[in-house]
Length: 382
Image (cartoon, rainbow, N blue to C red; front, side, top):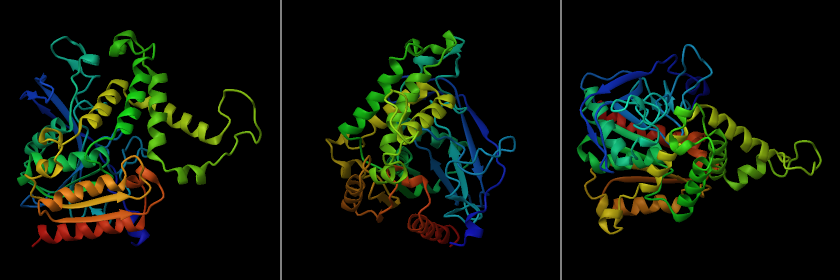
C-alpha cells in the first residue's frame, strides 16, 4: 500500500455513551438491572445500514480503536494502523464501531461503577461475565444504533473469540467474521498463566478482597506482576532474542536483585505502565472470560456441532510464531467450519512477532485484510 494513504487517520474522535435500563441476565445467573456502554464510531453509516463493522477488543484494549483525542493527541487508538481512510478497514467505505465491554474499566459499567443497590462501587460484587454475555450486550448496542446486521465482526485474540461467538449467537446478523489469532478454547498452559496472574493480584495486601476502592488503595504491585506474566506470552522467543538478547543495562553484572538485563527492565516498564491505568478487578474478570470460552463444551467437545448454527463467511488468520494461540488451534476452527460447509479463507502468516502480531504492521497481513474488505465492500454496494 501507498504509505501516504496508510498514514491517514480518522482524526479527532470522541467516546459516546449508551444507557440501557432493560436488565441483562448473565450466563452465571446474575442480573444487572441497568448498565452503560461506552463506544466510538468512525466513518458513516450508509443509507441502508449495510456497511457497519464491529471491532471487538482484546484483554487490555477498549472502545478507542482508531484516531486520537483532542485533549490527548498522543492517545492513538489501539488498532489505528488497521482502521482509517485508505487502511485495510477503510472508513471511507465502512462505519466502524469500537466498544468497551461490560465489566470494563474504560467507562462501561464494571467493578468501579456504583452498584445502584448499595450506593457503593461494585468492586468484588460485580459478577463474572463471559464472551456470550459480551456478545449479547453488543447486540443491544447494535439495536440502539439501528443496525440489524453487521457487514463484518472482527477482532484479534479475545476479540476474535467474540467475533466467532457472534456467528453462533446471532447467525443472521453477521455477514463476515474475521477471526484473527484465535483459539477455540484455552489450553491448560494458558489457563495456568492466567491463574498465576490472578494470584499475583489477589494476594497483594492492597487487594482487600476486591473492595480496595473503599480502602483508598490499589493492588498495583499484583497487577504489575500480572501484566509482566501476560506480556511474556504475547512475544515470540525470536523477538525477545532480537530485541533484548542478554543485554545488560549497565554493561556488566551488578550482583543484585534489581533489574540487570534489558528484558527485565522492559517487563517492569510494561507492568508499571499497565498498573497505572487498568483496574485489577476488571483484569481478574477478563482473564476468566478467556478461561471460560469454549463453544464446544456444551456439545461434548464437538466444535463443529457448536458452530453449526453459523451462516457467515470467515477469514481466519493465524501467525506462525504465536505460541500462546498456535496456528494449529486456528486450524481446528477452520476444520470445524469446513465440516459445516461454511465459506472459509485461511492464512497462516510467518510474522516474527508472536501473539502480538495481530496488532502490528505486516504487509502480508494487512494486504490480506484489505483484500477481504474489498470483497465485503463489493457486496455492500452491489
